[in-house]
Amino acid sequence: MPGIAPTPTGRVDRGLVAAAALVVIIAGLKAAAGLVAPVALALVLVVALSPVQSFLVRHGWPRWLGSLVLLLVVYGLLLAFAGILLVSIGQLSGLVPHYAAEATAMISEVTGWLAKHGVDSAQVRSALSQFDPSRLVGLLTSLAGSALSLLSNLLFILALLLFMGLDAAGYPTRLERIAAQRPALVSALRRFAGGTRKYLVVTTVFGLAVAILDGVALWALAVPLPLLWALLSFITNYVPNVGFILGLIPPALLGLLDSGVSTMLWVIAVYCGLNFVLQSLIQPKITGNSVGLSVTLTFLALVFWSWVIGGLGAILAVPLTLLAKALLVDTAPNTRWANHLLSSRPLSKDDKTAA
Image (tube, rainbow, N blue to C red; front, side, top):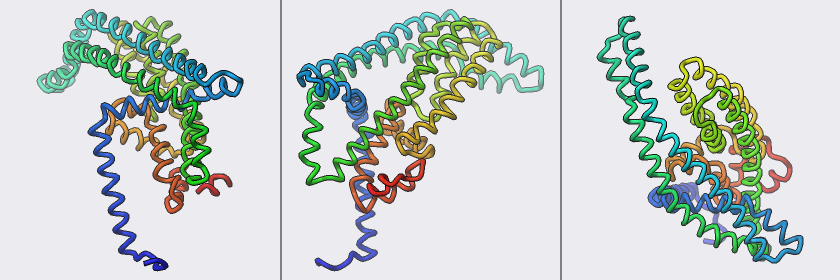
């Protein structure tokens, strides 16, 4: 009845219903991961680059022309990444058979060395059989097939970008119209867009710096395909916390097979000196301050979104978490207190007012 405060039992019941609804939503997202992942990527790209469109419109360009420029920028970036990735995977697939003999010989040497030191050779062979080079060839073949299937998803993403890019020009006006009725929602969506852009700017700047430095270092060390590994460093820079490790393993292994242990150690030293300091120490601090997410929450977001929508979820973990936070925390007055727990820094006066 009106005027009667909710009982503790009522609060618990509502909490259970909300938790059950959240579980159903997560299960639906996981079931539709093949659709959700490209939609999320298209949304993040449009949000990130929409200031280009807004800038052109403010300076007198027609909206349709601003949308066209936005689409051309996004399409150019996607096609450039897809082209470099496909060419590099093809080159890597051609190199793998060349290094199969070296890998087999190296495994035999390790097995003999361990056997001399009293380790059961049968157990060693069983463990090292997991690193059979033929499995690597099969993995690369599967990866090439996945890259080809990515082209079909790319067509879907390009179509999504076309429609989202055309709609993006009108969203500022639409948000202004509903601000009077739903001010909290509009404010939350604007914070999501601003936080996503700040995160992508910081991550892209660090990613470019790391990719250039890694590529030059790998070229100087004569590691094959330095452009591919530089691109991998750039992409894995968007993976919070563990991207450094993901970008290190392939060039280190290839350096080992191509030039020996000394090259592998140099690759590890270069990556630890450059990537670890920049990506694991400096960047998380700046990223956390720019988007207001704690390091722990960022890592948990990486695990969660990777589980829900796959590898693309690892790259989009922070933007998707910002969107979830905007919709689930920032829009409701009775849940804004959670910002004090989720933030990586003490809230400012504006943040406290919003919370």
